[in-house]
Image (tube, rainbow, N blue to C red; front, side):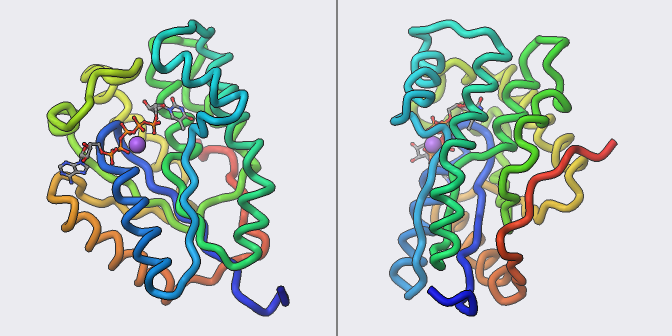
Length: 221
Ligand code: T5A
Ligand code: NA
C-alpha cells in the first residue's frame, strides 16, 4: 500500500462496566463497514491469549493476584497486541477499541492500595499508540447497576464503580493532549449510537492523522 493512502483511525471507547461500550463498538464497526470504510473491533482485555486467560481467571474469581501483578498483566495484554494494531492502521483499517490504557490505570488506582496510585498505574502505558479519539460513555454507577448481568465480576460493586467514575475524570484532566469526547450513555442504545456516529463523522472531517500514531505520554502534574 502506498504511503499516500490514509491510515486508519485509532478510536477508543471507554466507560464504566455496563455503560454500553461493547454494544456501541459493534454498532460503529458495522456502520463503518457498511458505509464503505474498513473497520475492525478490538477488545481489551483480550481473554483469548495466555495473559488474557490469567486475567479472566482473576476477574471471575477463580484465581488471586497481587494488585501490581494483575495490573502489569492487563498492560502486557495491550502491549502484545500493538504490532498487529499498528499494521492494520497502516493498511487503512479503522480500529475501534473496547477499553484501553484509561481503564487500565483507573481500575487499578481505584483499589485501596496506597502504593498503586494513578501515576504508578499509568507508567506502563506510556509509549503505547495514542488514540486519535477517545469516546467516554458516561453513566452514573446507579444506572449502570440496573443493567443486565451486573454484579458477576470482581470490580462490579457500586463502591468500586463510583471511585472508577471519579478517577476517569482525574485521569483525563491530567492528559490534556488526548482528544476526548464525553457521551451521555444514559439514553437509549439508538440515541447513544447516533451521537457516536455524529461525533465520529465530525472527527473524520477534521482529522490529520500522524504516521505512525503519536504515543501516550506521562501524566501532567
Ligand atoms: N479492566 C479492564 C481493568 O481492570 N484493567 C484493564 O486494563 C482493562 C482493559 C472487565 C473488567 O476488567 C477491568 C474493567 C472491567 O471491570 P470488560 O471485559 O470490558 O472488562 O467487561 P465486560 O463485562 O465485557 O463489559 P462491561 O461490563 O464493561 O459492559 P459494556 O461493554 O460497557 O456494556 P454492554 O454493551 O456489554 O452492555 C451491557 C448491558 O447493558 C445493556 C446491554 O444490552 C447489556 O445487557 N445496554 C443498555 N441498556 C439500556 N440502555 C442502553 N443505552 C444500553 N446499552 C447497553
Ligand atoms: Na463489554
